Length: 313
Image (tube, rainbow, N blue to C red; front, side):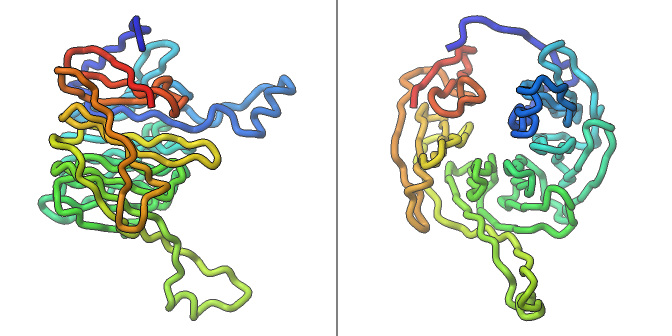
């Protein structure tokens, strides 16, 4: 797929544990019209389309400018090791989780800490983070097997949702809709939760008929699947076109990519539509869509022999 390295950027502040891109569309409809008319566009966010934020285990977080290959320091050192960072899709916010149960919200433009919450349980360690495409919710995967979801904007201390998976969590991912939340654990299970907006009965009774009742988010457990003989090392969603099916992909140590058809899955089940054997002896490390913003045709799999291989879907 790739026959040359475009650039190499060295991060000197310890091992890299997380990278987060901002997948906000390059132009809004209004911006596209202004661009077509030859108007100058106002920059809305510090984070450009191809730039990203990198996080190391030593607590360093830096903004990587692709065009200049420069790194701008945002956070320089924390008290506890960090495993994950995620970026808000439309605001200058980033969220980091550490191994002391600390969840922080930063403004990466002004480099200021906006809010920090500390889970009170002694065994809480944040392993992974994910934010939905609307920037409404942040999901935290904990080593003690719990997934906790917060309001990404208000960041209230009380979570929107909490569930106990039963195994150490490894990854949490929102679907592009974002109506689904997929959770993977170290027992190689894929668990599915589906978003429903409900009005609590006590709230509905208090409101007058001419007012729209406030809705609260609830993620209902909707089945799980166990397909890999080894651990799941990475997972991704596709971004379906209008009318297309939503799929979820898992990459395992067993050198298989499992494709789950989320759209056609029945209640309390996850339909498996394809098993792709990589037919390689080396161990896979991670995967991504290629090209990065196509999200439709080819998956690039990176292995521990430093090769990148393509698998067409």
